[in-house]
Every structure is written in structure tokens, then in C-alpha cells.
Amino acid sequence: MSRITIPQTFNTKTADAVVIGGGIVGTATAFWLSKTGMKVILVEKRDGLSSLTTAASAECFRTQFTEKSMADIALASVEMFENFRDVVELTDIDIHLCQKGYLFVTDDQAQVRDLEKAIQTYQTLGIPGSELIKGKDLHDRFAFLAPDALAATFNNRDGWLSTHETTYGFAKGAKNVDFFMRTMVTGIQKDNQGICAVETDKGMISTRLVVNCAGPYAGTIGKMAGLDMPLKTVRRQKAFIRTSHPQVPVDAPFTVDLTNHSYWRPEAGGVLCAWVDPDEPESQPADELPTDWDFAAESIYRASRLNPFFETIAADLKADDVDVSAGMYVYTPDDKPVIGPCEEIKGFHLNCGYWCGVMMSPAAGKRVADIVTGKMNNKENPLRYSRFKEGDFEKGDTFLK
Ligand SMILES: Cc1cc2nc3c(=O)[nH]c(=O)nc-3n(C[C@H](O)[C@H](O)[C@H](O)COP(=O)(O)OP(=O)(O)OC[C@H]3O[C@@H](n4cnc5c(N)ncnc54)[C@H](O)[C@@H]3O)c2cc1C
Image 1 (cartoon, rainbow, N blue to C red):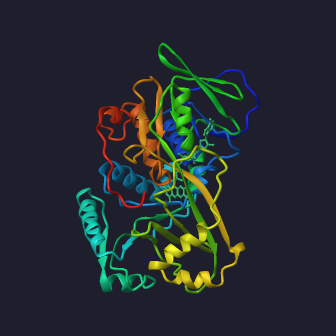
Image 2 (cartoon, protein in one colour):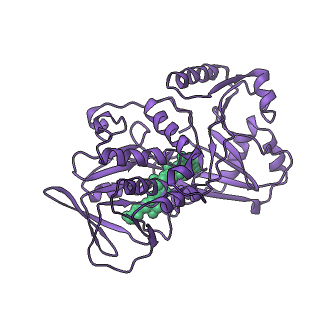
Image 3 (cartoon, rainbow, N blue to C red):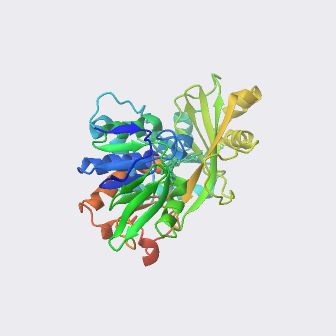
């Protein structure tokens, strides 16, 4: 049985593993560790699970990755989302899986070659169902696109879900986990055998295994253990636009304009719309992030280029119909997460460095457990932390990250 509680201050507790961070990544990690028979404590400084970056996300997942190391985790995760009730062994969980696809669109002839190359890569990597759609076929299937749209890659297995239900599904399915809310990690202790305890504002937890799943604060937790991790945190925003306009194609996929980095998708009661600003500077992690007064207008303007129905929505939009929120992407030197042990500090494991942590969380959490139990050799794990020191990494060309 697992429990979600707000503990009073306590004398030293003991756990086989302590997971730091109760976002979707930490909760999935605690779930998989608990399935190995470990007694796990997850510590979360906020009031509830899934309440920081995970709550700020667009909640989407995809199989379309051009790097094998990412595609393997993404594909395995989609399979787990598709079979979520079996994975967590609960019949009454509904993660609201919506597989309407991801559509990466371009109106730039030069970029069509990139799309063709991506499709070839997907095929080589064994990602089923990815299509290159061009010309008339594209407009017949996605009639909402502007006439200028030339080509797109599409995979109808991609889509979106409820991150809240998924996170709590992992928590409810976990076997022997104490989820401690409003419990802040303040330090990590080591002895000559490696990690020996986690200090929190409620008390000490004695353990030999810690997993750093602190999202934007992973660098701060790393420093507590004596590790200077190469992580960059960058604010990302999204806008929800309340509209019942009949021109909104409610069955549309998650649609990305590859030329101007904007994306949108239908959402209950309206649309989600955003753009990934390549010039957004790195900033310090924070729970409360400011949003730009013009973010929604800029996103609508950008989205309307290839999705002209946005002009109709914008024409009678009121300020009250727009909500802008922000969270942080975390980037590593190769834009891929770090999963598994940090070999310099025995017992200190990582599952962080994500710009796409929602869609990776199920299989990434499982990989942490597989390495801990020896089912997977960390040397065969392409997302191991030591790749940076070994120089065994490179940036890939996956779209929109
Ligand atoms: C606008 C936007 C859109 C996005 N869209 C998508 C998308 O469509 N698909 C996708 O896959 N990803 C998306 N992402 C990225 C995704 O949201 C993150 O990668 C993912 O949520 C990371 O999950 P996490 O559990 O690692 O982090 P978080 O959800 O941030 O969880 C980390 C937790 O650690 C806790 N914590 C930190 N420090 C401490 C401490 N000292 N003590 C105790 N607890 C601590 C925090 O309070 C937090 O709850 C998006 C992000 C943004 C901002």
C-alpha cells in the first residue's frame, strides 16, 4: 500500500530508496522502484504531486524522434500509456489518452528534404506508422491548413493525455511508497560508502539510494550531493484560448509549424497554442514564473500563418478568454535527459534534464529501476550521465525541442 501524506516533523526514517520530486518523472520512478520490492519514500516540497512543470506542460507525447536513444524511450512510453491500466494494475484509472497524432508541417520547399530524411530515420529506427504527406493529400486530410502548406510528417499514434491522472495513476499503482508532500530536501549526506541520508525540513531519511527527479531544480539537488551538472533551465510558456468557434477543427492533431516554431492543439473548451522561442535566455529555476503580456498574441499570430482559422478566433477574442502559464524546459549539452547512476557518487541516481519529461516518464522510470536491479547494464544505457565526460554524445535533429 502506498500513502500520500503531509508528515509532521519526524525522527530519522529509513528507506531503500528516496526519490526527490513528485512530478510525473519522480512519481513514475517511485512506481517502478516499488515494483522491485523496495520501500521507497518520495519527497515533494509542494502541496501535491504533478504540480510544477508537469502541470505547465501541453501534455503531449510522440513517437517521432530521430535519435535512437530518445525514440526507444518514447516508443516504450507510448506503449505503456496505451496499456496504462495493465501497467499500474488498476482498472479504474483513465488517463484520457487522445491519439490524434502529431503533424509537423512546413511551407518551405528546402525543409521538405528534412521531413523526407526524418521519415527515413523513423523507418530505420523501427518507429511504426510515420507518414510523409504532401500536396493535395495533405490538404484533403487536414483541410484546416493554409494553402501554402507543402508537406508534413504525421504519426497518428502520437497525441496527448491527462498528466494529472497519469501521475496519480503511477502513485496509486505504486506498491510500498510513502509520498511525503510539503517536505523539502535541504541536504544530502555521504559517507565512505556513498550516499547515506537525505536531509529534509521534516527530518532525516537514512538511505543508500537517491534518485534526483527534481525537474528544474535537479541542478540544485545535484549540488547538494557535490555534483555540478551541465543543466540549463529555460522558461517556456503556453496559452489556453477559450473558444467555441465552429471553425476550430476539434479533431485536429497536435500541429507544429516548423518554420516559426509555433504549435497548437484542440483542448476541451478551446485550444492550446504556443511557440518555442529559440532566443529565450537561460534563467534560474523558480516556482512562480512571469508570463509575457504579448505571449498569447504572438502565439496566435504565428499559428495563424499555417492555420488561418486562428485569425477568425482572434477577431472576437476577449482578454478573459486567454490564460498564459509558464514552466521550464531543462536542457543538457545534447538536449537529451540523464537517466541512471552518477558513477562519481555511489547511490546517487538521476532522472532529469528533460524538455519532454511527460512523454518519456513511464519508460525512463522503468530504466532507473532496471539499472538499479541489474536488469540493464548502465554501460549499455545511451542516456547515462557519464556520456558527457566520455565525450560520447551529440545533438540530434529531432523537431521542436
Ligand atoms: C509550456 C510547456 C509545455 C510542455 N509541453 C510538454 C509536452 O507536451 N510533452 C512533454 O513530454 N513535455 C512537455 N513539457 C516538459 C515537461 O512538462 C517536463 O519535462 C516534465 O513535466 C518534467 O517532469 P518532472 O517530474 O521532471 O519535473 P516537475 O514536474 O517540475 O517535478 C519536479 C518536482 O520536484 C520538486 N522539487 C524540486 N526541488 C525539491 C526539493 N528540494 N525538495 C522536494 N521537492 C523538490 C518540485 O516541487 C517539483 O514538483 C512542457 C513544458 C512546458 C513548460
